[in-house]
Image 1 (tube, one colour):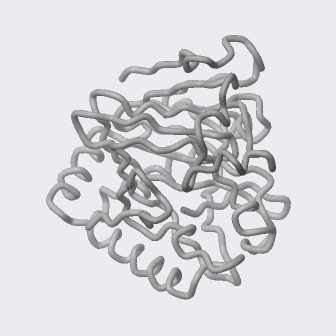
Image 2 (cartoon, rainbow, N blue to C red; image 1 turned 120 degrees about the horizontal axis):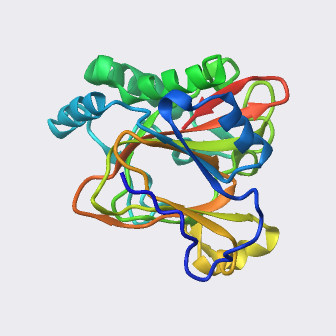
Length: 278
């Protein structure tokens, strides 16, 4: 595994002492690491070997054999295209709520994933790792009692634009039962990585109302983060990464292999424990 923590070109080398990456082994990953992200005292937490090599190999063998058909995010919204299995909440948006078709696809995706992957489902292994660290299992976020889908299998080979993810700003405060999350974290655990590229970059910069002119599809022109403090992380197969998704972030293109991860969001709210969705 190779990890790169050098700042991106043009970013600040100093800056906020709390905006740093923490790396931990899976057996030492604990509640304090998640709390550090929730409190803003680290920029990202890299978890080494959260998924076992055997699980990754068996899951990829099934995926390569076509056990799950990968679709893509709405290409009118997401370019370069990103392949994925499982419904993405933002592809089903109708005002401040998901379209009716979302719930049907969410239920179907859970059934298909369970049948196709069974005991080698990386989502189940990732949730088990989070449960050991937090002390309690994260529950699915819900809307009127209905559970949101969590655990997208996502393949990003051509990179991802600079963007931020904030369900409160995307859907408003009434999407989740129990209210909007106080903090939102992105979780990725890789079951396959490419030998070149694929670095995740996270900036110490959140969306501002004046950013609208720099909008570029689902993301933003890189000028939005010019000169901002940045961390860069390149994780390997079986590793996981947690960071605050409300910070601008991007993924570099990769070559020489498939860059495929199980991905979902974690939220922490006033009246709830950790909840998850994709």
